[in-house]
Length: 432
Image 1 (cartoon, helix red, strand yellow):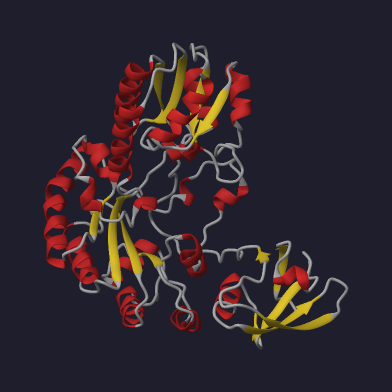
Image 2: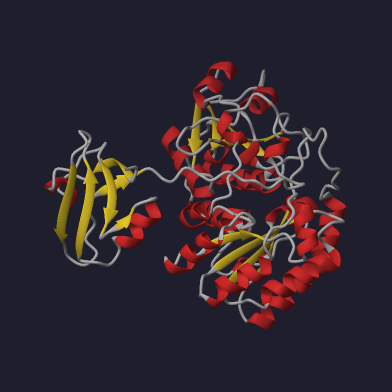
């Protein structure tokens, strides 16, 4: 039986008129068996006449003939597909570097092309079956987000820790021929997939433009929990500076040749190097922003606009938590905003004790890290926390501490804000 478990029915919808309920199962649409949310979206997207096969909670099977206006939704909601597990053993895998004692979902590695299409998750395609490749093409699952790392087959097998995997370049060529849009990334491991190997990878992927729409180069992340794992060289400030000096001009050359922004260096390179960022216009329509590419230039533009439009708010003292890498530009923004609003805004760079000092991004700061950084300090009216530090939908830090618990331990009130200058300013106005 299986099919899709209905989680909700929109009141007044077609499904409600047919008296469907949460707990029923949608088995088929026009004879096509339902395996996941993608099947449902694909087979209900265009047809105006639908034949639904539904299993009621009492076991009764209904066949429902539906006639609807073009594009009219049925009013059914379903759970997203459970992610397929990753069978790779990447030498730089962040999950392998997690300390013990965190929430169980954090240790789950997913490698699911469906979540690449639905949520923008990066996948390697190393475990993709021929039938799944065929489905991607038939159902037009586009765009997809692909972790390439290297187009050299032997090197890629070494990096993914798996032998006998399909050629990524051949997979991408098949998808490109089918006009599937692809966004790609390379996790850069110094001394392994940089140098001539990176030149080869960039050249191979640029040759598939415009099907391959973008390529981001991002530095590997290393924690202090790498016992019994391969020895890897970190991307430190010297490496980042040399890398930008070499690849900043090369990226411009590639982009000029393609006449569109294509090749991007992650913000973290510039933060580690202490070098100025490219102009925001060089990031195009920010296709890799969820991958940490262009976030800081966008923040700086928003910060400038926010300061210009800000008004006097009073004389409150407020503390704002941030990661170590973002501290310099956040501190500058808070100084300017404080001058304009009259508020005393204290930025605190929270050192990452959970993963180690080499991990500097705000999104991996734990509640325990913040307690260690602020215990015994004058926080003022409130401690403001960027929402990027919290798990979406759950509102807790990586170590399961909630903002409320954080406030109790630090004897202060807390407030979260959308991790943008405007988001912070909106919260400050509410505190006033």
